[in-house]
Amino acid sequence: MTTLTLRRALTTTATVGALLLAATACSDDSSAEQAPTPTGSATSSAPASTPGSASASPTGSDRSTSMDIRVTIDGQEVEATLNDSPAARDLASLLPLTLDLKDFHGTERIADPPRKLTTENALEPQAPKTGDLTYYAPWGNLAIFYKDGPSASEDLLVLGHIDADADLLSGADRITIEAAS
Image (cartoon, rainbow, N blue to C red; front, side, top):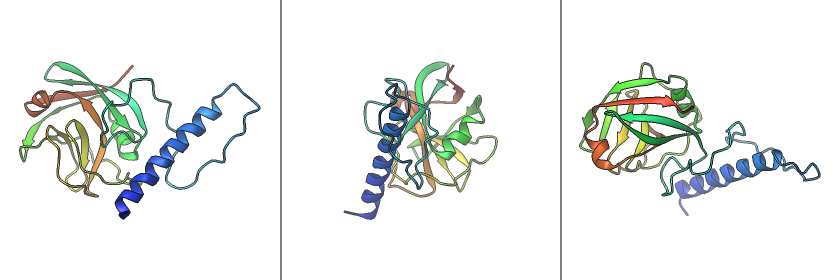
């Protein structure tokens, strides 16, 4: 088992453990035993997801999806979520945002947020998939992949996922990202 595979497995296990801990803590059964709080990089501050908020297909943003967002691409509203990473929470603090997009490498549409996002305590790197909303740390830009991206890189942080057709994403000129009400 490679180190990357092991790290992904540990991250998934920590996420599931945190969700189980949150579900147990919210239970009405006062006699239920509470598991000890996990230590390490897992956080317990994630709000509970609503049913259907996570994407049905596995993506880079499935780890602890915590926030539904409203995304409008060239006037068309689409469903989207941000994960519970520090960089995604930092992006959420900037909302609402309207950004002009341009093509990059025939794979993604990119735009510059008003400031750089935090990269501290970043989630494990992974290859971006179609629909992933990402942050490229060296340049400080957001990228929306309309084709699967290259291999995983520590410089590319997956922030969430946009549930939109690749054709809509590939031709997008303007995106508005807002917190869902």
